[in-house]
Each structure stands twice: as C-alpha cells, then as structure tokens.
Length: 327
Ligand code: TXA
Ligand code: MG
Image 1 (cartoon, protein in one colour):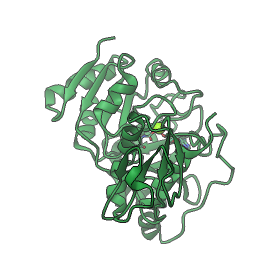
Image 2: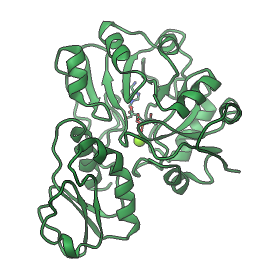
Image 3: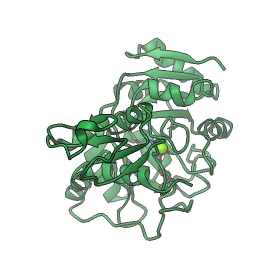
C-alpha cells in the first residue's frame, strides 16, 4: 500500500484528498488535540474491519465516532439534559460522550461492537475539523498506534507504528493535549469511564455533581462497560516502576518537577515531563517521553510521583497501565 503523507497545514485540496480516501474505504491518520487518530468511514463496515486489522486489536472494541459539530452528533445519538450541558460546555474539545444510539444511526454495528450506545467526540484540532467537514459524516478513530503501544502524539510516531498498513497520514505537528479524551457515559447518571484530557473537576463543576464510577471491574476484561481499558495498555518495552524516590542502576528516569531523586546523575537517560511541575505540560510530553526513553534502550524506567489532581488523574492512569504486568 502506498502511504500518502500530507504535511502540516491542511489546504482545502488536502482535506478533499484525505476525505476522498475515507470515502473509498481507506484508513487516514490525522491529528486531534489529544492524540493522533486512525480514521475510517464509520458507516463502512469493511473499512472498519480493516482498521481493527491495521491496529492489531485483539477484540472488536467499540470506537469513538468523530463529528464536526453538535448538529452532526445529534443525528447519531440522543442527548439528555446532562449530556447537552457537557456538550455545550466542552465541545469541541477533549471529551467523549457515550450516548444512546439514534434508531437510524449511520455508525455501523462493527464500530459500536453491537452495543446500543455510541461514543462521540467533536475534536477541536483545526486539521481534524477541516477533515471532518470535508468528509461530512462520522469518522471512527482509535488512537493511531499498534494495539497495546503508547498512543502517538506526532506523525512520526504514527509512521513508526503503522507505515505500510494505512493509506494516508495527515501531519499536523505535535498534538496539544497529549493524553486521550476523557470518556463520560451519559446512559444514566453520568459516569467517568476513562480519565483523560479534560479534568474531572471541570466536568463536575458544570454538572454540579460528582461523576459516578463504572460498576463492573473492567481492569482486565473486554466487557463493554468501559472496554479497551485493559490493565496493560500504553506499554513501552522497558519495565516501568512507579512512585520512584531513587533511580536504580541501569534505569532511565521519567522526572516531574524541579527536584530530581538520588541516582538521577547516573541514570541511563533522563526526561523531565515538566521541570516547573505543570501537569498540563506533563500530559503533553508523556507519551513522547515514554517512546524516547524506550528508544534509548533503557531496561527500566523509574517514574517520579505525580500529583493526582487535574490532568494528573489521566497521567497516573496511563502510567499505571504502562507499569501493569504484560499479557
Ligand atoms: O482522544 C481520544 O479519544 C482518541 C482520539 C483519536 O480521538 N481516541 C481514542 O480512541 O482514544 P480509542 O479507541 O483508543 O479509545 C476509545 C475508548 C475505548 O476504551 C472504548 O472501549 C471506549 O472508548 N468506547 C467506545 N464506545 C463505547 C461505548 N459505546 N461504551 C463504552 N465505551 C466505549
Ligand atoms: Mg488507544
């Protein structure tokens, strides 16, 4: 398969070209503000099947449908008052809502894994917006990495994982947020399915209530409550050791904040997510840092403690998965 690389600013002609590839059943990687996505026409089951195969997903795990605006979202899902409030407060942006599917929803059953709910997101990235408007229909897009790998935050990450398996990569430069969207289910009282690029606190402020937690333990199964949240995920090759207060011989250091722990001077490599201790900056650098430390061939990565508030919840979630025992 020929890989077509479109770079940086998406002209109208580029957007049309990428949209044509989607219409033809092709797989198009594109930037969103959270991470790069691997897009396919949500209504085309054959294209969606190719997408699962290209990622090497072990099971048919439902996908997020990306649309350009709320009008488009309302043609595929039903919004209750809470969902509408969240949509109006945070879209376009790093929030995914799980909602009841409309009867004539164009997203194919393969993309929703046969559920009667659908996950929807309106990305704010101008390149994603241009592509979605040119395509004029829902685009399903998981993160554009091989299954189980760290999500891509640059076009180069996408190419290193998926070159030869997909049709187009739209390069929009490094993403802004750096962790995947926050997923909230609005099938009943709102539940936080996945912490992500929109902090829980912001959502709870708008709802004026605490978000629920998923009822089943979804740490290691494929049940569709919060599927895809496998315990080991986002895994670099090196072993990841959390809450490290020292660096052991042979380890690389993933640092946070101005003070480095003992052993940092002799670490195999050091990458500081945010020397000034800023969680937003740290989220933006997280996946790139894991890839960079991995590329240095470190045997282990010692990770300094990271606070749990704001984007820290999502950062700690991804690090916990990166550190979990591998299947
Ligand atoms: O930031 C993001 O959300 C990125 C960018 C590309 O938009 N996409 C992304 O997609 O992270 P993915 O496929 O890696 O994660 C989607 C998650 C999975 O955990 C999946 O199980 C869950 O959304 N999901 C999708 N549909 C669902 C549904 N109907 N009910 C519950 N969870 C659902
Ligand atoms: Mg993913």
